[in-house]
Length: 265
Image (cartoon, rainbow, N blue to C red; front, top):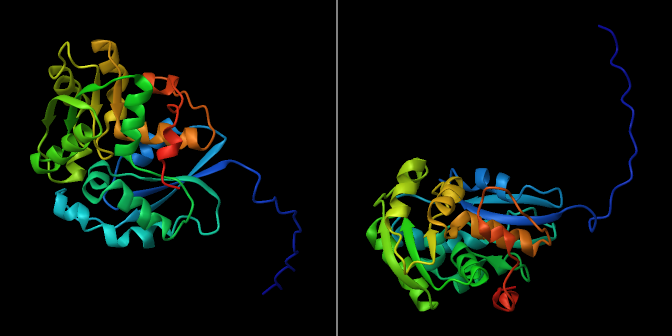
């Protein structure tokens, strides 16, 4: 057998860690099938890079099961590219952020990533409503009623009038990812009334970003979805002026004045 060739060592110059794109972190549920696909459209920019870690979750999507994730948040956050300088970290579960509490989520993530701003979809949705100047919304979720009602209560506590609320009553977030576009569009449009200023499609596991433009065109009103709002805030926090076409009026806006004062960092 012929001798193996000698392997040469190639020298290179390492780039300083402060250079390059802004890095964004996201904690996803182990069962999530939607966020990464949405983020590929919503965070498409050479100036940003998304890193994800997944936290264990078992269906059904009930408040009890959502709360069960809380003890594992710190360990999961620590998996997000140790040593990387992250602009912000998103916790990609709307219902869990409400059930566990935004402050508790931030505290758990900060135990592993001190000082990094933590953004949840429920917090991002409130920023979106402020940027759009809306106070009265209709909310559509894929959840069961016992998970939908705390979401509506959260919005009301934050000063948002939930004029109408409807849900698909699904327990498994993998089923939520399979809701077809026409069902989402018809259900959302059926809730519209003159009092409604915007539509809110709540859930990172529901493919709501796919239907934003069609609902806005049909109703002439802004649409906010969990993944859209979360990616909008994360991108703005990273300094990117993201304006993806077809994903809603929200991307025409910057973060509302004073919003960053409320971000847990």
